[in-house]
Amino acid sequence: MKMSQQGRSHNEGTRRNGAEMIWKKFLIAFCLTIVLVTTIASCSAKQTGNDSRGDIVIGAKSFTEQDILGELLAQQIEAKTGLKVVRRLQLGDTLVCHNALLSGQIDLYPEYTGTAFSTVLKQKTIGDVKEVYRQVKDDYAQKFNLAVMPPLGFQNTFAMIVRGEMARSLNIKTLSQAAQYIPQWQAGFGYEFTERQEYANLIKTYDLKFTKSPRLMNLGLLYRALIQKQVDLVAGNSTDGQITRSDFVILQDDRHAFPPYEAAAIVREATLKKYPKVRDALEQLTGKISPDEMQHLNYLVDGELRDVKDVVQEFRSSKNL
Image 1 (cartoon, rainbow, N blue to C red):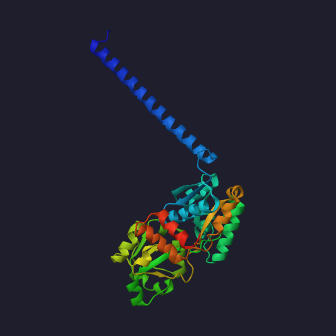
Image 2 (cartoon, rainbow, N blue to C red; image 1 turned 30 degrees about the horizontal axis):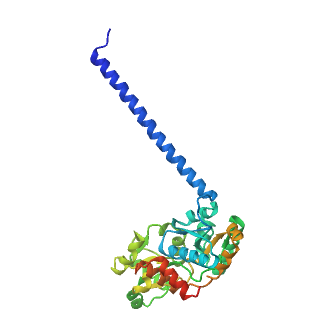
């Protein structure tokens, strides 16, 4: 039986459409392959150091204080060694920066000893500042061939914060004193805080009982919620700039639920071997930043919207660096 003209036209149209679909799929696959190859080549170039990156590459995590510290390390190295420094700030979280260091994509970045101790080394919390630093320094050298430089002079630990008026009316200064009132309070925490080991340590150490489920919110909203009395207790950072500019009180962690978080630069040993002057430059920053000074620097950037480079230049000048 012969096929009708209409049937033949339909089949020919179907074949053409099928061919067009195959061609489109081929083009899409081809384009995706080009993008993938380009990406891999780019990553390989970065890891092998063939990206015209300069002499030293400094990384930092993705928040204001790290921008400031990363810029401080960069300016210090440039001023004292004459080396060309490339900044890769806002790089990501702890493990992103740590892995970038191990792979050679960056040469150093600012870290906190408590974070290195718990997040990277997976150690249980201890409150001894010197012991935490010693263990981090020794383990980083043995396991990763990384040097932990002397601390910069301040800690940025978790801080349990309340309104000043409330602290004064209840006459509380420590978490031990506040524990009896916490069942009556509404707490506000960042989304990740309740998943961290530090939160579990806090609950256990002070036997805290939250009768109201803590409100989870963006970190940038915590202090506003505290001011507006939407919450009574928040978990912030001890060097947040807004603390000194608002009537807030940090409740003292008198039973050491949180580990010490001394700020210190972590550097590849290979980099220090290649550029010995870098070690001398970084050691000149030892103990140069007090907790109040770090709070102030954070406020200048976050509160007054000052440029990070200008803030760091002024700070270095004030310290005769």
